[in-house]
Image 1 (cartoon, rainbow, N blue to C red):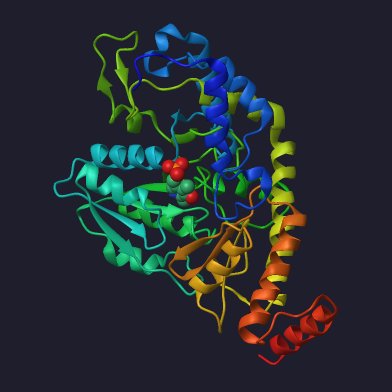
Image 2 (cartoon, protein in one colour; image 1 turned 60 degrees about the vertical axis):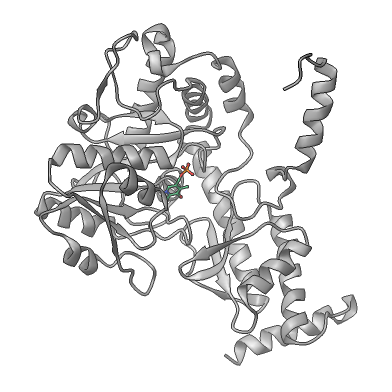
Length: 409
Ligand SMILES: *Cc1c(COP(=O)(O)O)cnc(C)c1O
């Protein structure tokens, strides 16, 4: 650190230099992220509440009121009005809070949690921090959790079962209804991780798509993670944890002696009220209709992309139910495809199980980006499989050839 400060002007110039090295969602080149351009209505609200601290909410009664309303609105969206919970930093914190509530509510020695093999790595963090043994359930042929495998893993040490409504890697929805039945029978806490799917599945349902139930309408569901900073278009950091019953929240209470509140339930202490304000504003601004439109728009682009990927000579891992497409190739190594795409300026990500290229079709990914992307994919396919990049006038013939190759399969 320097002894003397520099001017605002100099700071602004230096900040711009840093910013220039960052990618932007707006460019349409970020294809592997679950975050997106935060919506302006959320940003305005966020800025307005920058000094608000929900960790000492007696000082910020307006923000506290807003948080209650947000949790209620999210509960309404997730099939139960009288829920409780908090707006926190993201899916990771939400999942840790849920596992902590499950552990504390059950009072079992050497506690274990059962998560699908497809679970987000935040459960590994949770298990490590909370001294829980992590048991991984197998997946079925569609990469959904195999309920029989969950059943086999249940023991008298199980404190929680986790189901995922929109997996991070493939966007797959686990059979939550069956998990709910099982957990009711066995009297086990069921947590649903809908960090990604929470802001799409209900709206796609309202738009007439037939998606499986995953929320509090299923009696066995004890808590749900839902992230406004993913498909909710809220600025980072904004996550949500919703509990069916207040007793779960009570089980993770800590006394807070010197603050205006007597107790605190979250992991972080000082907690921004700006995220809550942004979420409140966005839920009010869009309403169900607005979010339906966003979810439907993403699915249209997703379906177009999925077709384009198949036409370019690649294989989908699963038919997309949510706005996420994963694919591989019979002929080209995943790493080679990633490198080639990087050359063309695309930032994609790679899923670990199954290993595939993974594209999250967030609202910043538009038709024109997808068109450009699938053109590049065709070229990569041609270069590696058909041994030569087709010239523009040969493109037509090339695409026909690709179609024929596909039909021959
Ligand atoms: C993104 C995601 C998380 C983690 O959320 P963060 O906001 O990155 O902490 C957890 N679970 C699922 C299913 C996710 O998609």
